Image (cartoon, rainbow, N blue to C red; front, side):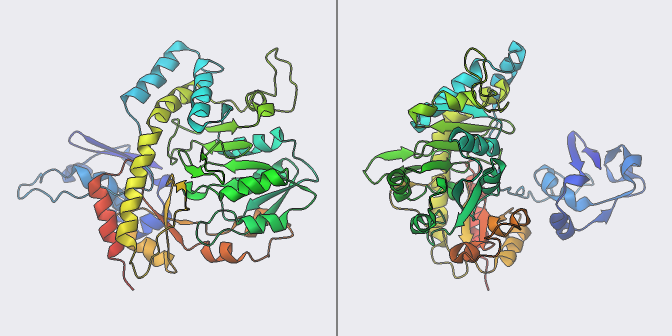
Length: 446
């Protein structure tokens, strides 16, 4: 249910259906007057919403627009807007790129997608890259590219977004869930080695929250002739020094890299989007073909693929965003560093650790606490959005109820799950917002 309110030249459009029940419950509700115009508000489509609506939902929208009293008296106190966990970047250059592409009427299979793939591969140091629909489809495509299917096993962490795990049975293979590191929350290399069998065909290494996987995982996969798939959906711009001393960029650490451009990520494409990368010479052409029905340049389908193509408009926006990625990630690192310094002695929350040799991309900044619900409530009451990660490990979710590991304990995974609270760290944060977040976290007490 939606409605619009106008106050002077200020317009607010709200959709009641999209309001979080938790937030609306906390914000409370209040009656609108029988004659809304008497309050100075003009209500559009009044009959469609009735005479009682939640005014609490206006809290965030109206914070920055209460400029003056309409009935005389002192101006209203200016209040900071609510701080979200993500704020996608959007500017005139991106808007112009999108409009120029639309005006060209070359909306699919044009030059922008090719340029975006080439630019992204160059940024990562990969041999080839292909834009696709989203991060989930890139994981499916990566498994297909490597010929993984029925009877094969793929090792994956359980502490990750569900798509990392569900992509495996979608190609007919079996996920083998292993534990994570206590300090960095990525795959535990010793646990991976212990889980390898004759059926193991690949490992999906998740660069969780932007923290690159242990470089020893790369060496283990090479020594055992097992493919390494990077789930880099949260790691745009992350780097890691390899065992040999080479600095590797996420997307060029394994055989195939999988990225997501969901709007909350370090860079986006104006909607859903993803990217496949590869360092394997045998896959340089195939990463492009699999997103286009497995077709060769002569249009003959050489292998099983699908239509996973990204639109030209999204690719045009992605090209502009990619040109800003390095400075955006650097801004996230500055904010994370400031958080680490201020929170290092906090009695209730613990700061995240950074692996030696890593340049964390900080898609999320997560604080560990054994009081996550209280912490989230405290942040919420101070106008700061947050999120608990990941409440239910993948192997404990209903979709894997028939999996042999459904009730298997994974010590670190089970300890961490539900106790990490992500606070805003996006590059669009202002210094005022950063300071407010810091003071709010520091005021969280027993």
